[in-house]
Structures are given as C-alpha cells and as structure tokens.
Length: 428
Image (cartoon, rainbow, N blue to C red; front, side):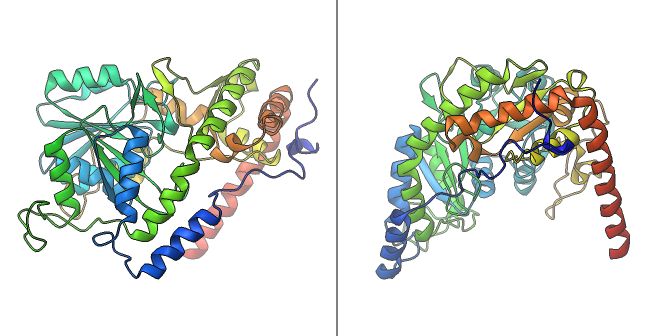
C-alpha cells in the first residue's frame, strides 16, 4: 500500500527538496548583455546580435527564413497577415491553446473559429478542422501543445487541397521535429515564443519562420513598418507596424539557445521515463506521442486521468493533492470557448468578431481534456531521474487513498471558492 498522501497528513513526497529553477542562465548571458551595453548599439536595425540569433535559431529548427519579433503573439499576427488573413476571413484554431492564438486572428481583422482537439494528444483534430471549413476560411492555426506536434501530414494535406494557409503555433515546440523537419518549417509559416516560461527565453520575444520567399518578405515588411528590404530605409510601401526585437533580447537568446540541445535531451529522457512508469498506474495515461516525431520538445508534461479510477476526484482536487506533495504544476488551460471573451461574443477594437457561439458539449474532447488532465511544470523534466520518479510516487499515493482525498480536497476547494467570492463582493 502506498504511503499516506500529504493532503491527508502524510509527509510530502518532495519534503525538503526543490525543483530546478527557471529560467536558467550563467555568465554567458551576463557577458553578452555587457557587450551590448558597451557597444551603444541597442536597436537590432543597427546591431548584429538579433541577426546572429535569427541565423542560429533557423539553423537549429531547420528553417529557410526567420524574422525576430517582440513576442509570440506578434509572431502569430505577422504570420497571419503575411498569409493574407484580413477582415471577413475565418481562421480555424484549436480549443486547447493560450488565448493569443485566437486574439491574434482578431487583431488581423478575422474571426477565429474554434475546433475540437484529439483527446489523447490535446492537439487540433483534422476531422474537426474539415467540418469547420467554410467558403470564408482563409487559414488554420495548428498549435503544437506542450511540444507535441499536431498531425501535420493530415493538416498539410487538408489545407493544400482546400487552398488554405497553415500556420504552425510553435510557442512550445522549440526542437520538435516531424519526419525529419522542424516545426515551423512544414506549414506556410511558424510562430515561436521566447516568453519567460518558454524553452528558451529573454523574458519576451518571438520569431516567424517560413520556407516561402515571398511570405518572408511580406512578414518582414509587416514587422518593419511596411518597409521593403531592397529599398531605402524610409521607403514605406504597405501597412505595417514595428515589431523589432532588441539587441538585448538577441544577446540573451543566443546564450539560451546554446544550452537548449542538452536541456532538450534531459527533457526527452525524463518524459520517456514518466511515460513508462505512469502507465503502470491504472487510470493514468500520458499525453500521447507520435512515432512520426523524430524529437519532441517538452514544455511541461500532460497527464490524463480517469476520475472513475480515482473515486470521482475532480481535477481541482487532483491538483490540490499533487501540490501538497510539492509536485511542480504547470499551465492550466481552459477550453477557449469557456472564456468570457468568447462566451459573450465580444469584438476587437477593429470590429473583428470574437467567434461563433459554442454551447456546452459542442467541443466534447476539449471539455474532457480540461476536466481530466493535469500538467506538470517543465522544471520537473530538468530534474534528476530519481526526482522525476517522485511524480509517480505522488500519484500512486493519491490513487490509493482517492476516496479520502476527494472528501478532503472537496472541502478545501469549496472553502477557497467561498473566500474568493467574499473578496469579490468586498471589491464591488
């Protein structure tokens, strides 16, 4: 019998132990930042750090072209605009993603159409995409959630047949390769993020990648106030905005990228270890992989669980119990259609509609993932193997005492909800 869970008074699995920190940095970042400071050239229009980072990152990912921008959201906006997305268009996005995937569509003037995901992978379901296509569909955004690539064979085929652009949201997939090709090089364009929590980071930052020469020129122009690369600096031919990354960010990201291959190896080894050991626990299944991925970046780690195997324990309860075991938990995404922005059908300042109406039950796979999946923070995957196995021990404890855990966490969650409601009333 497993030891008593911490939430029931037992000693936490991780008592007195810490997880690796994030972000990770050393003297390389310090030296590069000092060099930029001393140079007096802090704008990437005149310096070389960002240009060098673009060259190094595109080589790492296997991309023909790259454009460094201010953040991942802007990378999506630039990619969509370069693909010709605009007012009156629809863009299909997955239900399981960060809100920026959809709001970038709205910023481009188009309407995001939310499609369901595959329950095992949590990624966009090609069949749901096919059902959502209309004569207004201009693009599909495929999100490689937690580094797990979407079914790019099916999506590229579908989009190619329908004449629809495919944009890869690669915010969490630095280093993932599909049939020998890096994510962000398979669709028409890719969009990467270098935000604080991502696999390499400068606090913020992003990049657009593409294999298409003309799309590259359009994206570059959009991110540089409508300039044309072959013309003089103050020649502005089309509408654009300023999305340039700073030399500070480029300097930090070059140092971050240098250690990414080793970090990716550790994350992949930890993920494989968890895949093997967690499947020994009844009612627990890791986020699925795909043999067509040659390598898999892991931004966090998804664990599906069957509540019937855990005495009906809710996700809130499961997370509360894991937290008491001092397991580092990661992101907690709701399905997009559950957000108030889309429930209320709000509009962007430019008049773009938020989305269609999606009644409860219309996206059953995404709702299931939301209810029955917990995510580990990516720091767990950088730990030593014996530390990674603490996750397995914690879940075994919780399952063994699931009925009592459900009762205890139910009271805890309800108490927290009462406190939150009281605070809300006082703030009005």
